[in-house]
Amino acid sequence: MPGAGAWKPVDVTHAESLLEARITGKTYRRPDGVAMEAVHDLSLSLARGEFVCLIGPSGCGKTTTLRILTGLDRDFAGRITPDPAQLAIGIAFQEPRLLPWRTVEENIRLVLPSARRSMDLSGLIESFGLAAHRARYPGELSLGLARRVSLARALAVEPDLLVLDEPFVSLDAQAAAELRRCVTLAAERDGRGDGGRMGVLMVTHNVREALQLADRLVLLAPRPTYILEEVHLDVPRAARSPDWIEAGRAALAARFPVLREV
Amino acid sequence: MRLNWSGALVRAGSLIGLLVLWQVAADLAHSRALPAPEAVLAFLSKEAAAGALFSNLAVTLARVAVSFVLAMAVGTAIGVAFGRMRRLDRVFDSWLVVLLNTPALVITVLCYIWLGLTETAAVLAVALNKIPTVAVLMREGARALSGELDEMAGAFRLSFLDRLRHVMLPQLEPHLAGAARSGLALVWKIVLVVELLGRPNGVGYAISVYFQLFDVAAVLGYSLAFMAVMLAIEYGVLQPFEAHARRWRLETR
Image (cartoon, rainbow over the protein chains, first blue to last red):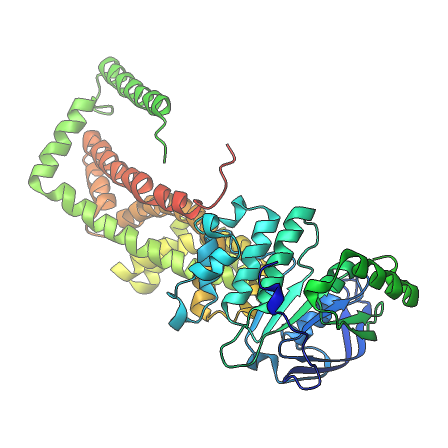
């Protein structure tokens, strides 16, 4: 794993806060008119340099929470500080959401502010193994490759906050491993030059993935969701063996039956 | 684009067949009502030498261009607005249906009555005939715009111009190309009628004059010349534009 040796666990108590969220409630109306409460009393903080995984069963409101935290959904009760509009946010959606009529490189370039539109992206493109694909259209790419492009695009904006929505879902083992390498690379590289580091927020329903990557796990209850428990993982990422991950998963499943299905 | 040689050969052969049929029919009929191809050709070269052919073609082409651009711009704006805003669509959809079903002749006559026999009235009449069909086609395109890509553009805070150019227009392009192709065919046919009714120049005017003189060779000559120009635009401009708009799609053949 490249660069894994340089990884250090973040001392959360001294790290600079990136985002403080307090969502007292989020209700949406289903197409048939029935009101559904998706989130109820959820408080979450994220520090720079921290990798947080939101874990919960399918349909528990993970994606809704993510949309609120990133400012895409502003129709909720509660408060996010600072306003997400003030942060540089890079999002890798579950569906890669690339523009099919633009090439891989154009898709990445497009999200850059106009002053940096013509900057050299070779480093980013090569570190994600996309050099051979930069002139291809997204329709020609496998899902794994398209997700990598989507991740590269999210990182191109040099985000304060990197958001990953189920990045490994429906990938075969090899593509998932390749993408995991890219995510690790992104998380461990100093995201920004001003001394601070990027915070990562990943949503998943796969406990093993979360145990492999995160500094902190946030376990979410079924809908309407709130935080069941937060788990700090102090073992360096590189030292997390398959056995350690399996033991962690079993321990969590024993304490939280809701995680057994995932 | 790949040239399809056998297809081109079949098309050329079929056109030559049509010419031969015309020649045979003209020989058999032996009438002023159906002149032979050579008579039409002779008229065309005489009219071209006099300069009238090109000036009439140019005037008509200019009217086609202005009314086409006007109809595409207004029709696209209306269509996209209707496609994006359901309430607007519900209120004004019936207006669109009324305009869509008003005969071209009625619109033309009313424009001339209200605005006088002017260039503005002529161009407006043609545009008004075309706007509802463009609007209906573009409304479908706007309804199909991807909400996911829209959210992506919002998440990455793309500027309005970038969203328009890189996210919305490429999705609308196939609809735009379709509207343009069907629109051009409609516009140039209506332009001739509008010229016939109230303009002192242009291909439509020339055809009405030669119709009154019962000069069928001239009528056929003008229509052939104009058809040639419009076909050149179709194959030289619109089809390449459409191919360009679709270049990113995977070949499905």
